[in-house]
Length: 635
Image (cartoon, rainbow, N blue to C red; front, side, top):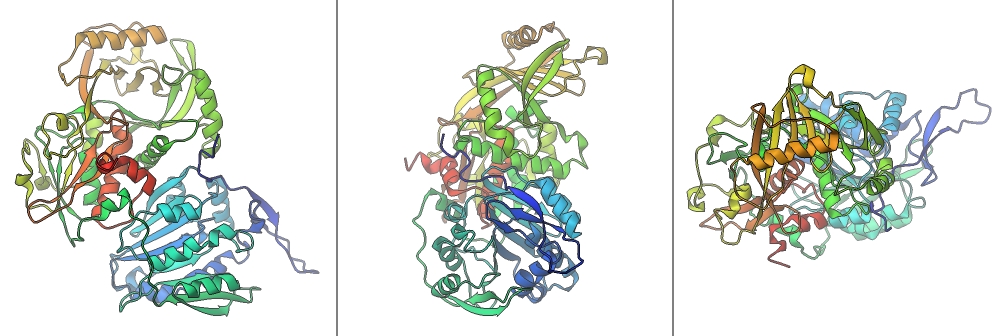
């Protein structure tokens, strides 16, 4: 099997005694050591001071934060490692809040890491360095698994961390941003060039120059602990003024500098560049058609960026279509080669889990469960599940995930694979997404029949789901296929509860949510939204046969029908459909999630919101090409 995880591997760390001077009575403290690179991450005796000197002070961040005039300060770091550079930058940003010229500005910190450190090791490091804070707590709660991808982590004080888990050459080639994306400061870290030569490849220097700036307000800077001649010469070649200065501690020299000028050729255009075709607009007005999972998630992502968003739906409530189910379960798609679809589902889960964690304190009822038990089924045989444990278990920091677990149902043991999952009530979840959107911007009972009705908007997002098959607002909209599903909910008395340890996935679902037992759902190629008694019986019979239950078709049963919208290749259609012009706004599609609506909705919303707001996108270019609606036009 090829490397399913694109070179991303959990870091191999040892804690070794530090070197002490001969004759010293000092007890040698333990320091973290990388077995991969045969080097230390930092010396616990002066790691904090070294970071402050090499990266913060040498990039003149205290002065630059105070006098910042633009709305965003962008730092890119090569080698996230322990996160120490990031956390010290967060602390400085917070401490200077009252002195900053623009206290509402955002700090966007982008870091690339191929060998992520386990969160338990990180926590021990932060304790050792005595730097535990609100920032370390927030980082560890949202810290991603050791899987390749782009991860967005929001922290207090308007700080955003984009953590890219990938080899650096691939990360830079796959980085999706518009031509107007510029970097204010570079932290060139990641072990010495002699220990980690891949980190210092020419692609890095080309990328630095491509996204560098030198004008009256901004000038890109860099700082690095190394003073290697090869690095110095390359930086100079790519348009940077390079200066040697005194290094930290026993280190004689280090390099600092600023960008002056260099003409750099842009990369060969791809479908991913289509996401930045719209002209920048300071405060665009955006319309969303459809108030299900995709529409509400899009409204959430845009509104939190301070953009004016209007949500339209022909129904009298949000989540009136397939999103109205009382129980929606999101799980990642697992595969032996961690293929592109699996990557997309795991990244979608990361956005969903981050949202649930962020809002769970205020709304503990938001999520019923964050795991599920996957039993052997038509899709996943027991043999396949056994293979997946080998593929995924070492990638997840929670040692219980992707391990065999047993649950009792009617005193019978059922063995399955414990997987990450999120189980929510569809309508409640959608309402939580738009809770802060002004009610005057939510337009229910309002059917949009033509884009002519939305000419006042600069962008229109079509989140119409299966209604695309009934009424296309654009002639070149991609086609979707309907997949009807019926779920059956049975009211339970406390004495009737199965007391499930986890939501159960097999060829159907078995969930307990509040006072309901939920079974199903069906899969039929149909647009018929009426309840079928035959489908109810099928759901009950399937659960009875698999688990030895005695569920009866009676007045305790309530059925929910939804039409899922599917694409020819399972990947959603998420991206620009047409460019804006004098007559019409720029049109985006955000649909075709199939059975993955809950899993994909927040990720796809972030892709579109980031593009509209001229931010780097939260997906690599190869995955953007898989979800773009233009993949059909350019096939």
